[in-house]
Length: 340
Image 1 (cartoon, rainbow, N blue to C red):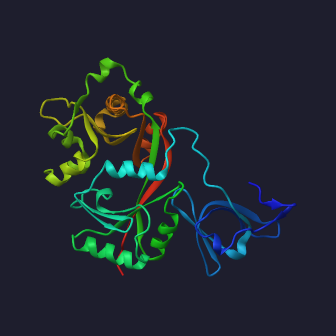
Image 2 (cartoon, one colour; image 1 turned 90 degrees about the vertical axis):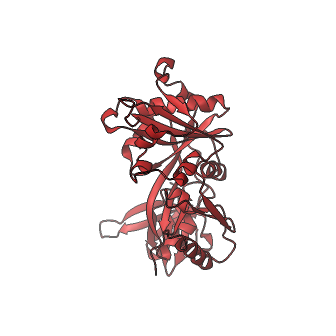
Image 3 (tube, rainbow, N blue to C red; image 1 turned 180 degrees about the horizontal axis):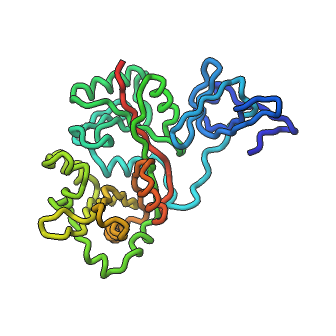
């Protein structure tokens, strides 16, 4: 990483560059034997009271004392991914929102307040698609009140790591005491290789349906853990432009499914979710089988690219999706209001 101009290190950023992507070098261990340095790349989200806050693609923030700066400069937006279909953040965000629709929503400027009886954070959080139309503190008060009247915790979903994402808003939320509870990778990949990964004979063992049946729901951990599945949960699960549920049957007619998956086809995109396999049957390729069946259906409907969401600490799923050709496009985070 090159910082020098004419052989000199220079700091070529200041507080007016807040909101831009920057690269900085700073001292971490000054000493008589020579200082040690570290380089940080991300969005400059604040520069107050002699401290810089830089948010990396992962959503993690780095605090750097102004006095420790050795060099710094604005840099272009992140380079294109090495693999996977191209997509802008707004395009992909629209596809994700359409594939998991809430029971109730209300606009606040370019924010959308979503509620679904507490079923998943995604369907019970603010979707940020721009500015709220009012000062931030006023918007946050309205968000807290809106969710409070529904007996729900207030969550805001932000994204980081792509052009037009929400690093600055994420930092503002942290400054105001909102706590990041969950982060997830949004991954994209080509669709055709998924569909071609399994032979037709094996795919014949996967049942496809427009609605989840009791066997599918019995395997879906978010629905079955609470006992009976409410109509609201079924509405969220069934939402989307063209929604499909894949099931590998259980060991008996009464048993829950051995493996399941869900896919929403919307234009060129196929969005995968709820890919789950019985613990005793893992490492048999059943997750790949379910995704192949869903991918074939999506191809038949004209889709060509795919996306999915996986929590950032789910190492097993991340390894699987990497093998299947998916790459991280950006990350999203749920921030929770912790009270005054």
